[in-house]
Length: 239
Ligand code: UDP
Image (tube, rainbow, N blue to C red; front, side, top):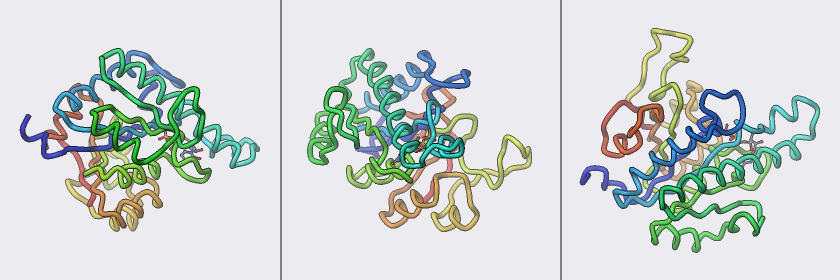
C-alpha cells in the first residue's frame, strides 16, 4: 500500500472499446462496473484519479468521414460519444460510493460541468474522480491527446494507458506475431521513430515536451491497475 502511494495524482486513459466487453459495439454494463472497481481500488489508496475515456465503441470521426460525412461534424459526433461513455462510468463509480465529476470540453451544462482548470483541481483535492469528457473539444484530435493535455494541466505524475489484450508495448503486434517482444522501457522518440502502438504522434510529442511518463499496461487482470501503481506486473514505461 505504501508503494502505490508513490503516486499522488494519476490519469487513467482507456479506449471506448474497453467498455464494450465482448460486444461489437456500445457499452457492456458488467465491463463498465469492472473498470469502476479498478478505479476504486486505486482511489481507496488515497490516490487522486483523473480519467479520459475514448469513444471508439460508439463513433469515430475517421469512420464517419470515410463514409462521406464532413470530418469536423464526424469528429464532434465522436466527442459526444465520449460524453456518453463518461456518464456510464460516472454512474458505475457512484454506485460504488465514489464521488465523481464529468467535466466536458464542450459545454453542456445539463449533463456535465464545463472544463475550468482550477475547479477540476479542487475536485481532485477533495478526492473526487474527474472524468474529462469530449476530448480536447477540437476536431482532428484524439482522446489520447486529450489525456496528455489534461494530465499536464492537472500536474499528474503519469498517464496510465489501460489496454485490452496486451500488457505493454511490443516491437510488432503480439496478436499477429507470436515472437513479438515487449519493451520494459522505450523513449518517446523511439515510439515516434518506430511507429510503436502507444498513442498517436501528436499525443506522444505533447507528452515528451512536458516530460510526462506513460505507463502502458493490461486492464484485463482484476486488480491490475492497483498492482501497476505499486510497480507489480508487466508493463512498458515510456519516458
Ligand atoms: N475526437 C475529436 N477530438 C478530440 C477527441 C476525440 O475530434 O479531442 C473525436 C474523434 O473523431 C475520435 C472520436 O472522438 O475518433 C473518439 O475518440 P478516440 O478515437 O480517441 O477514442 P478511442 O479510440 O480511444 O476509443
